[in-house]
Length: 241
Image: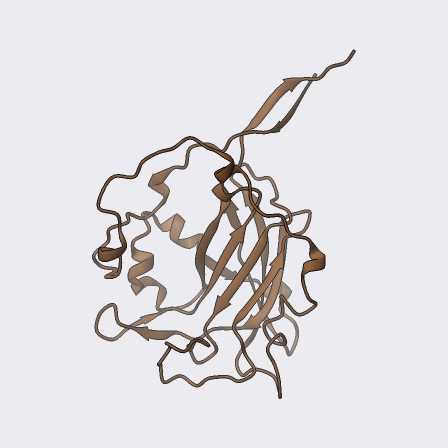
């Protein structure tokens, strides 16, 4: 009879990731490393991370419609986003901290350096956070962000998207990315998404419309599942004596 505990993280498959240097995405030219990356052995730096408790969260932390509202409700299409966080072996990732940030319905961020002509919304902060439950499930409510122009090339627009950050059981599972919305016509022309090697991987960054969970006369719903690196199982024989 055997049991197991979680061991080291498997080697990351770099073929799943876009190349660092992609001239079509202009800022990668200056930000990409010029020399080959160096592989290092796993240490406590990779296999540990902070742990979070539900009592650290307020009742509106995962409700971006209410958590910054002052004198009314924010403007825009109300949506719910939910899904599961699992590792590469299909195991649920529980108590993972999910943080999200986004533009408002006009495509403008609440940031002093954002000079886009889109209107500011005094009742929308654009930030929220939540924890996954025992099954790796998360949920938050927000306003669907608007697209906005960016200076990659002349007259290019970013698709509507929400940025997210995940902190799970180890820093090797740290993930910062963004997801998009099914049906957005700007997705196919986005230079950032074009850096991703395969169509399957691009689709994995698109939240799918979940009509079964629409709230009548209130909110549409999208499902977005996230997969992180997993730890290999280290098997050992049970001591039956």
